Length: 162
Image (cartoon, rainbow, N blue to C red):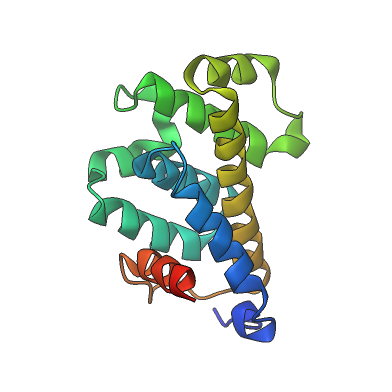
């Protein structure tokens, strides 16, 4: 696979905006481990190889188990995820696939039982953010494989310093 263009270089104004959202998300009450699960699950649904490479590496480096990552696309069929994670994964799927029938009321009610209003907005922003990254990387065929675990944290720290 060959990249079409490097969107980060083609328009350098985009990366700081996207990283600002990522930085904000890491300051919310949404657990970093849950953000990782959201990023991986949405990337599975969208088929974004770059984001799968990146977020599975970061998730493992931050303590996520291989078992849970391998079973994530079948999370409903496993006992590996708690109620809050299940609500977030259902929300992630519904928001990512919103064109398939909007966000069902039962998914919303499940999320409302586990997240307060502010958290639910932040959760939705997390889903929207990874979907944006997925679409940019898929559209421009960003080549996966070179990401090193922890690089996102380094990029976010650099953004805060600038």
